[in-house]
Image 1 (cartoon, rainbow, N blue to C red):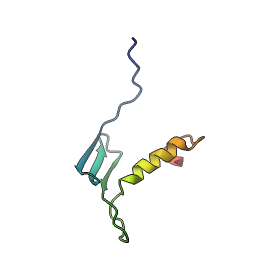
Image 2 (cartoon, rainbow, N blue to C red):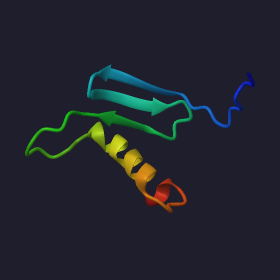
Image 3 (cartoon, rainbow, N blue to C red):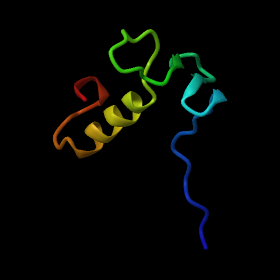
Length: 70
């Protein structure tokens, strides 16, 4: 069986407990704090569902040439 060709690799680290913490990539291009949303309160950190929602939107958005339109 042929070994698959690797086109890209990425390293990301998540710290904290559950939905409260910090995420970052090794290249420093993605880095932010996460916090569980509190009803009626202004957000001070990224809701953990936001990056997932953005990625799913991009996956299902046909014809988008890159992430800048997602």
